[in-house]
Image (cartoon, rainbow, N blue to C red; front, side):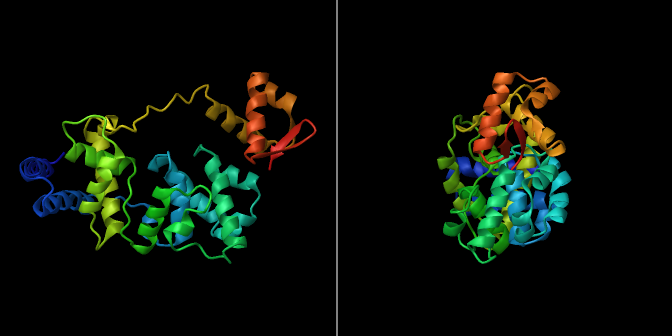
Length: 290
């Protein structure tokens, strides 16, 4: 970390220790975050737009997925499905074909469900208030707040992994087991309500810096969970089945099991789950994307 930033961090911690979260401490904190942001801007395509559809796609893609992987898919997805109408009308197999490589395929189904709701129930208009956004499939409190902040510059209070990392590192240096309920009031008090869009982007970018330069502060979070290995997991099996069915629609189950060298019992369980979730359709013993 550059010397100037290290000095600001030390000054902030000293001020917090002596006087708590005073207006001066907030000014130091914002100065630290913005100094890094404006000196190290990340050029990301979804930051160049306020289009609700494009920001929705980016937010759904970024759930549990690193920016680097999303960058390789976002513009390809937007080119294939440029708006709610085209996504709503697309065959699921086409959507999954573009989605391959991002994982967590349920998000692709959620995106199409949102697009169809916008088309069929909202007269093609994407909701502009938090309460209506929360009624859409796949949109929780964080995603609703983030969409409104990044499309309309509204000052909502929310937290995600990079923001959590910033606050734990700077405000809870000597603590463990820190709950988000303790962090959110600090997010609210330090929020730059005059420009929340850039402020949250700045927080996220500083969190990325911390990920590269310090031991992971998020391990101190009460919500921290180490991700289970992908190799041999149900996630991997689901992904392999869907990839095969995108390439070979209508493949018989017996051939699918043999082709992927799978355990028949486990495969049966996963196929049943994919059918219930709406990924697949079945005709006799043949499966294809719904």
